[in-house]
Length: 593
Image 1 (cartoon, rainbow, N blue to C red):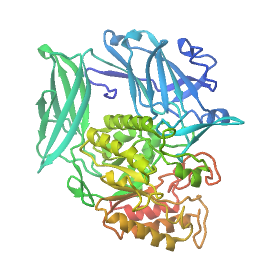
Image 2 (cartoon, one colour; image 1 turned 180 degrees about the vertical axis):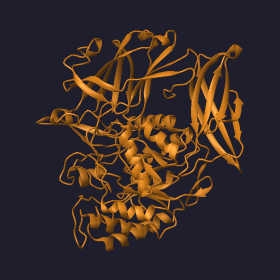
Image 3 (cartoon, helix red, strand yellow; image 1 turned 60 degrees about the vertical axis):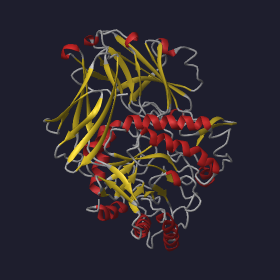
Image 4 (spheres, rainbow, N blue to C red; image 1 turned 45 degrees about the vertical axis):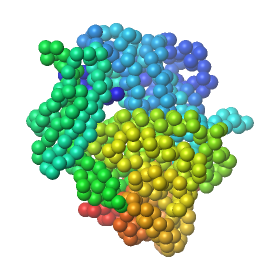
């Protein structure tokens, strides 16, 4: 599936703006056929945005179930006789879509795109009514998982991920057009041969019998540097400008579908960064050179819009990453918007690309989210059906991001239960799925400290070890000397595995403006001392090739006695003001990455 774009043969039209909106807590909208006409008794809602925080109303903020969106769009007259497609960049966590009262597509999963061919349901020059029902409930067969519990006050959604369950249309929606013959997929794989680069490409097309494929490669200035022909092939780039950390150089690969008489049937421009990624023992290599990851686990989270994408807020976040000296981030704990990933491609930022598989660990419930008493892997909870949903998410993530030079590592889950036989059975085939889809990148998962060295049964499948550890916070709270000793002891075991280690989470909740001497938990001084302790441990081990602090910025969570206005582990506040720790990291990372 190719993203909407404007080319010589394609056009797109944005549906971003104010849509009509209505909650449907009783689930009556489908049977009442709200999709058959103007949405009754509707208000307005911004798209993209999470719906939860727009109005100060607990019924909206904590809504469980269906919500309805509706807009109208005029199909351009120039699209007469052309194929017309509706494309949604995401709908959290599932959606069904109608166009002019006809159901056109349903999709499961909240952070990846889907589309529907609506050619037969619209007419060029006329308005089309687009209706989307989005559902935010989670169960044991969803990714991420959850459970609906019935209480005397009604149904309550329980989930095991430590960030608020924002929902809605978080990313742009598009209408786009192609010719009747069109490209459907492009895959690129890059290699290096001395000073030259090689780009292997594969294409797929529809309704293109008798058509030929040509490719033209241009450099960043638009100068043609190579050509190729055929539905698949390889082009060589002499004296290639490599994509590298801090140098997001992109070539433009134009793929042309050509009919008889050189008639251009379709054209699509695929950005290409020429680079290689490899794991060599305990080293992580980009272009054959070892790299050290500096950065953060991050969230798509801003006050007011929740997980809704906003270009200005995105630029602010990337400016702060640059200021602090970070060269990487993890898309914790779900795929990020295309716009964020595009920026990382253009600016040479390393990305660990993670699925939404967070919360597959009932053992965490008692410590953070309250007692719950569920078994993680069982026929009644996380089971084979869940795993197939999980596998489909991996397929969709790889399909979306396979051509991105910034993506150097797939993370197929965050902090799952990984010390049991059930976990081993569940995850073994998922690693196989990821490697079959993309043999060019390493694959891993993020290990939680409930499965320490010697007890984890899933780390054997990973090419890279990713560890989340909170010595000095959740354990040894306030006891940094003991935390340093115990952390070093465990890390010495992992370092013997002969794999690169990235510390994907380490952090301490910190209330901005709270000071204490000597440093005490929750104070800014303690966050600084905590980070310094971790850095002393990391610097002892050559196998540690990355440090990503949890978190970049404070973020919203469910309410609870451990969460004062959300998770406060950010080195920036939720409105992006630096805490003292930000300056410590800037001193450490500037010039290191």
